[in-house]
Image 1 (cartoon, rainbow, N blue to C red):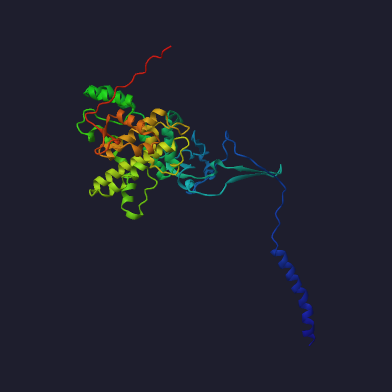
Image 2: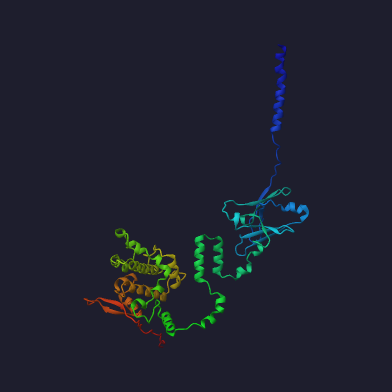
Length: 428
C-alpha cells in the first residue's frame, strides 16, 4: 500500500520535465530580423536590365569555371527596332556547344501574366532594391551547336535600316501577328512592293523584243486624260466597248453575291437598303432563268451598290451609308483608285471617275440602253448632269418608243468621244 501511494508523487515531476523538454525541441530557431528600406528601380530605356536565365540541361557555368575551364562568355543581342526582342548566348570556353535563349520564341513566347523582378539585399546598408528583369522574360538556355541556329545568323541591324516601311511592317507582323494578319500583310505587300532591281536591269533587254502598238498607246493616253473606265475603241459590239474584266477583277466576283443569294430567299428578301436603280430591277432579275446570267447581273448590281455607298461614305453630310460594309478587297481597291485623302474626302476628279464607273456598269445592267432618272437620284445629281456624263462615255440620246418626253441613253459602237476641251488662255 505504501508503494502505491508513493508512486504518483515520484512520477509527477518526471512528466513535467518531459513536457518542458518537448516544448524546447518543437520551437524552431527564430531568424534574425532586419529592417530595410525598399527601393523599386524603374527600367531605363538606355540601360540593360538584369538578365535571368536557366539551363534545363543541367550545365552550371559556376562549377565549370571552378573546375579550371575558365569563365564562360555571356553575350546579349537586342533588336534595334524592337527593344524587347532579345537573345542571350552563353559560350563555355573550348566547347563547340553554346547555350542560346530568346525572349520571342519557345517557352518565352508563351503567354503569362506574371511580372518578374530581382531583389538585391544589402545588409550593411539596410536596403532592398527591386529591379525589373530584361524583357520580363526568363531565358531558357538550350544547347546549340556553333554555326547552326546560332546568334551569328541573326539579321544585322544594317539590313533592317535598308528595309522599306512596308517590309519592316511585314517583318513585324510575321513575328508578332496572327495568321489572318500575316496573310493580309502578304497580300498588301504584294500589291505595293516595288519592282525587283534585277528586273529593272533586264527591262531594257526585254523591251527590245516587244512590239509596241501605237493605237493602244493612244487609247491609254486618252483613257488617262478622259478619266473614264478602261475601254477599247476598236470594239465592234457594245459588250466589248468597255472591258468588264478590267472593271470587276476575277477575284472580286466571289465577294459580290449578296444580291444573288438574297433573291433565293423569295418573300424574306429585303432590298430596302439598296439604291433605287437596283430596287427597280429586282423583279427583272427574278425572271431570268439562266442562273449564270442571273448571278453575273446580280454581281454587277452589287458592285454598283458598293460604289455608290463608297461615294456616300466619303461625302460631306451624307449619313445613309454609314453602316454599310464594303468587302475589304473592294474597299482597299476603291481607296487606292479614288485617292481617299486623310480627311476621308474624294478629290473632284476622282468623284467624276467613280461616277463614270457606275454609269458604265448601268449600261451592262440594262443591255446598253438605260434611263437616267433612277441612277441620277442615287448619285444625287440632276438628270441633265448624268446625261452629260453618259455623252462623255460615248453614249447617244434616243427617244423611247411610244413616248414623246422620255429619253434614254444607248451605247453605240465604234466608240466616239466628244472632243476634249483644252483650257484656253484667260482674257485680261
